[in-house]
Length: 308
Ligand SMILES: [Ca+2]
Image (cartoon, rainbow, N blue to C red; front, side, top):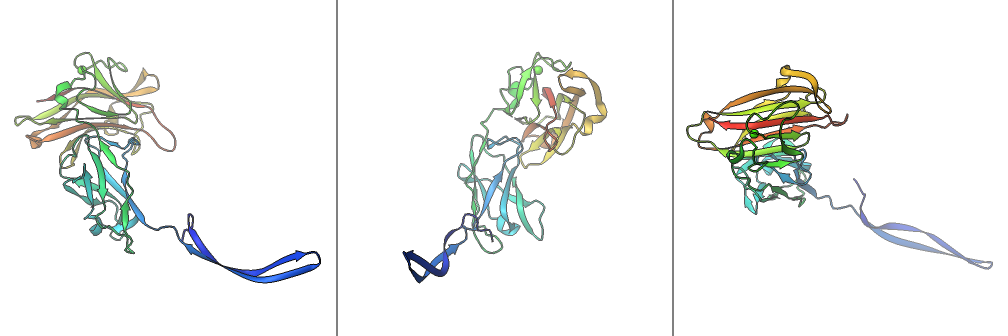
């Protein structure tokens, strides 16, 4: 049992002695102390996505929770994610269960969470395997403001209007020898940054095309160091549009920008939109870098998002 933070009382007994001049007196004493362990109540928390220490969620970010003690997925199934106090449609799914118990689960939403909303958790009577209640830790998340459809600024000629961004995502002219694919501006997303935008797919649409280039310090990609552009449907299903690790066969070496000596592209990625006709989809770009060996520089250039 962990008694750190414990408060309370216990029992002790002994003999006290006082000496005055040559006369010593002894007396027995007892004391009672009751010890109570710290409240063992477990908690349930939102897991903040990589690079979202501010608690802000972009359109396509998954909603995940961590629980300080294992719980059964059956009990977790009753827990709810609330947006501005209203339950989101969806359910928690197993992530790495051990003997049917989980400490981490993803919320499979059947709808995009509303923009500019405060997300809270309702454990709905969730208990651990000993029957102790599990409370939400009270740390909410906030969904980013509605940027409007990305089609209003699909070539980044108006800065990042129409997009949600976190970290160092910006608009520039030519970057690393890559001029804008259309117009005079393009987006550059650095390591640790993300960019997301949505569009309502027209009924006659066939494909989405996007121009991109990937820059890296060492041409190395792994689970913690990746450059990924994906299309996310309302049911949370993801289709990868660009994956730096997959595209590395196209890597070339040079002195493109300070610290960026590898480049993939510029290339155009295309993705079939027919199954998304009449539905809202989110295009999301994440540039991640971080492991115990330190940060490596990466940059993703995007421009000229087109729906055909
Ligand atoms: Ca442009």
